[in-house]
Image 1 (cartoon, helix red, strand yellow):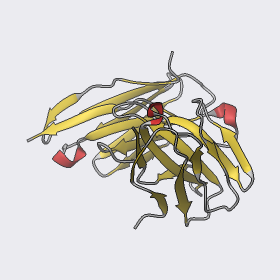
Image 2: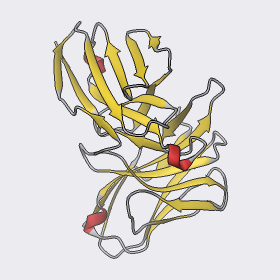
Image 3: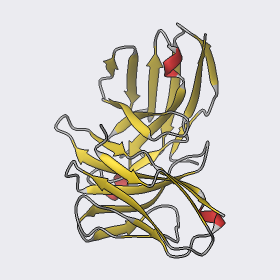
Length: 115
Length: 113
């Protein structure tokens, strides 16, 4: 049973449309992340948040924006979708574990196609 | 130079084989190390953390060499279900307090019957 949920799983949308990708987690994690990944390619961090009202841009420039109004919710918005935005978007959250390590839990991803 | 480097493979091995993956990282200040597994078109999942003394989880053994900035993953008695991409991951020490991870490109493994 997943503790981090992304919707929709698949989205095909026309150029110029505004879209919001949803991500919610039930683990109470403070840290949340958005990654972009093309098939066979590496993960690129596009946004992250260390808590409510905290958002930062990641290592890869992105035209998307995020918000963190509630701990459990970290939506990503594209104001005007373009074909170059076609990709898989993965949301993750993390915690610090007692054994001195921490892990990321990923959602199942949203596969976005802009036509 | 990439911050985390892995041989992309693919590694094609028969069932039952032992296979080893290596990874190097560039920032000696990194303190946390992981191996993740990613199946085709799926999300990454944590396979195991890597501790300084080395650690084992069933058929999987991870080792860390801080002096050489080198991490390894050994898989014994390979199963068909081990076919996946294995991602080497280290924390970004510049981000502080283990807040961000740096991901390798991954090594692709195909276990054949």
